[in-house]
Amino acid sequence: MSNSHVHPAWHARGLLFENCSCTTVCPGHIHFDQLCTRERCLGYWAMRVDEGDFGGVSLAGARAVVA
Image (cartoon, rainbow, N blue to C red; front, side, top):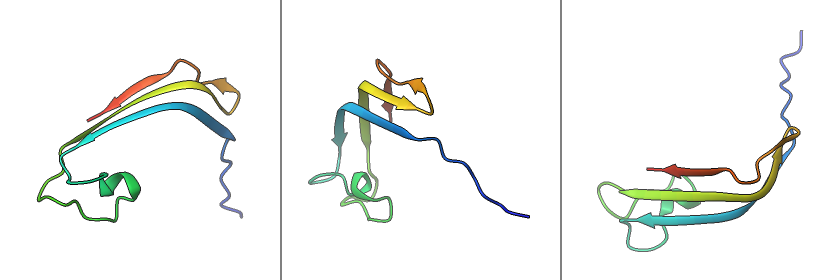
């Protein structure tokens, strides 16, 4: 028996705004294994998808905030 998973094709293009309490670009933005430059990272991301597709579903116009 095979344990394969189907991953839908996707792409997205848009804008990402980041604000973080780290001293430079947020290390967590690069990779979550990297440590923050402060004891606790306080940050926010805002994303706007101008064009994109996920498994045949349009992502154009999608917006999200991560806090």
